[in-house]
Amino acid sequence: MRIMHTADWHIGKRLAGFDLAADQEAVFEELVKVAAREQVDAIIIAGDLYDRANPSEESVLQVNHMLKRLNRELHYPLLVVSGNHDSGVRLGSGREWFDATGLFMHTTLAEAFTPVVLGDTQFFLLPYFEPVAARLYFDDATLTNINKAMHRVSQTLQQQFDPAKKHVLVAHFFAAGSTHSESETLVNVGGLDAVAVSDLAAFDYVALGHLHNRHALNEAKVQYAGSLLKYSVSEAHQEKGVYILDTETMRRKFVSIKPLHDLQHLTGTFAGFADPAGFSAAERDAYTALTLKDDTVIPNVMATLRKIFPRLIGLDRERQVDLGEQPHANVKLAPTMLVAEFFHQVTGHEMSAEQLEWAKSALVKAKEED
Image (cartoon, rainbow, N blue to C red; front, top):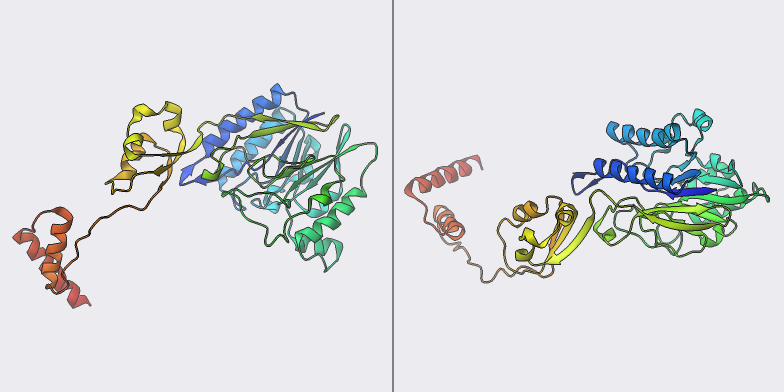
C-alpha cells in the first residue's frame, strides 16, 4: 500500500494577526492533488488538525469540509489522532460511526490498543495523552511522566502485533533528540516528557506529528511529517509537504507542496526594501519578516514598508538605533514653558499664543482633578 503521512494543519491559526484560512485551504487542495498523483491508498493525519482546543465555528466547518472531501467524496481511509492543540472530546465527537466510512479517529489512550488493519499493515493510532491518562488506564502510580508511560504503552501495543503484518505507529509527541521550532507548543520539561526512541524500535514505521520541522529527528524508522505551512519565522527556510510511505518496502519519500503565499525573512536596508522594483510579485506577496541594517531613525517605517510588503509580519534591527545627542528639557521651567519647549523640540516650531492658552487651561484642569 501507499500511505500519505501528514500532520499539524493547525486550522484556525493566525500569523501576526493575519487570517490563514485561505492559505490553509489552498495547501489542502495541493495535498489532494498529491494524493491523486501518488495514487495513495490511505492518509495519516498525525494530530493538531486545529490550532486551538476550542476552535471557532469557521475552523470547525473548514476541518469538517476537509475530512468530508478526503473520506466521503474521494474515499480515502483516514487514520487520524488528536494532538496537543486539539480537544480530543470535540475532535472525536461522532467517531462511533466514523469507522463505517473508513475514518478512523482515535482521541483517547484506550483506543490505541485496538489496531486498525488495512491490507498488509496494522496501524496503531496513539493520540496525544498526559501521564495521568496512562496512570489511570494501567492503574499504575509510578507512571509519572511521558517517558515512563510510553515505555508501558509501547510494550502493551506490541502484545497486539500480528506477526504476519507490518506495524505502523501514528502518534503525536516529542521524541528524545528532536529539535523545536518557534511555532510549536512546548510539552517537554527537562527531558522527562520526551519519548525515548528506543521504545519505538519494534515498529516498522512511526508516523509522528507535533514538531513542524520534518528534519527535527534523524531516525531510520521515525519521521515527523512537519506542518503543511510555515507558521513562524524560524521555519522560513524549511520545505513543507507530505511523506509517501510504501508499506511493502517501508521506504518513504518526501513530496513538497507549494503554498499560496510563502514566508520569508529578509535582511537589508530601508532604501532597498522601499524600492518595489527589487522584488518579484511573489516576494512582495509573501508573509515577510524584515531585519533592517540601518541604525538611524526612520519615520513611518512600518507604514512605508507595508506598502511594499502588505503581509509584513515582523520588523527588527541588526543594531540599535543611533539617537545621537538628545536635547533635555529644563526641569526648572514652569509647566507651561516645559510644554512649549517640548513642542518646539518635536515640531521645530514655536507655540502660538492660542496654543499656549490651551496648554495653560489643560494644565489648570489637570491640577484641579489631581
